[in-house]
Image (cartoon, rainbow, N blue to C red; front, side, top):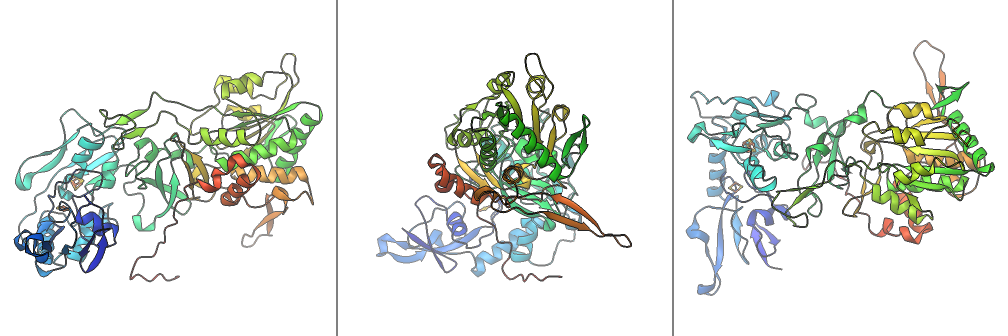
Length: 597
Ligand code: SF4
Ligand code: FES
């Protein structure tokens, strides 16, 4: 591989890479504002300039000053074999100081109230490459604040005119809403008259903006970024498989950001994925199990809910009736496996179905002139569930035909169905008339009533159709694997704890398996059975014991379940060999010592 030396570090590169790209890939720091791997190169900010020596082939390969010894933009100059580049020479450093001074002339000193503080490259580079004090004594030019879109504010006086936002709307979305208005120190970013920055990928400009000029209305003033922790995850809203970071603090999600993956979403996500997490903290989350008592649903303990559920399912199977399992396309592959195993345990001929897969319109490709197969294109998927393919793959492999939702609901009308385990976990109310007509405990013409176990995250009319209700968990509260529309298996981590007394559907399935086997049950999924008790001690009061989790198999650990799936079913070997597992980020910053307070 050819090599180049940058700031004394020998770096390998591939032909066509720019010097700045090579430096980044090799961990050599060069400041930059206008360069982005996903956008055209304009070399306008001038902070990345360096000087170099390059071998002259007409002089026996002797190193000679490149470009006559002038500074040149490293973001726009391809790396060449044997080149020696310096962005830490006195000349390059003097340029960095000059650029920083120029950028800060009209920049307001409002870092304490700026949302970008803590993740602002102007702040960082000012400290690393700036002069340390301002020589500017005149009045700063004041630019207006603008409401440029449904979710985006523009604080123009913080803008450093890197033009990344303008290039994004021209080159990635092809929607062209933004332009530069004015000349000289009056230049400002603006939306074309009559347009709003409202395209489906618009909020990526917030991530692109290196300063606090483009701000997220949804996140504005909600949290200081240094309090946020981030967990690698996968889009849990659509079938895109887009790689994301879930940013959270103290059990609450605050925002979602794209996680770079060149093979999937590159650097971008849709606004739908970015803001589609509000249901996690919705008021109507189910927070406690419920059982029927004298015909009415009442909150219950887990041991009661599990006991009733298994008794009802067992009774149906013992009476020669079928147990039906509806697995939501919002659940993980590991959960589909655990639920399928549970249903087959109770009734080896259980009926399997895939829950309704919501679709909105057609897939959309950005920019519109490209086809979806073009490596430069970004696709927004019409399918609004993350794992329909994964659920189908897993249930199919463990030995049953998997009915689609329509066929499953039709099948539920037949008299041999004695019990239903239904899972929801939809972002929106999924209790449509067709669902309510099929998942129902009431006796119907020519058939007895059925026993219904509902495992769901949000309250809906379906609750009144169930005998036992168990609260499940959203994707941010669990780890697992989704299979995207591109048929990629991607694992993700749990970002926040499960709310209150809810549990992940995978854990519920393992607990129910343990309940089925009973005390001292079989090995395998029910190897361990434990009572978990939390003692809630309040000052001045008698300690009160609250049972939060009854018989339990073992902790649901997604990685272990994947290994078990591959081991038990050869058709599921891909869950060991093909799953892309995200790297866990190490939070430490060089030179910063973390202390426990
Ligand atoms: S608003 Fe931000 S991204 Fe756009 S040109 Fe200004 S600094 Fe760059
Ligand atoms: S990053 Fe090179 S000129 Fe802006």
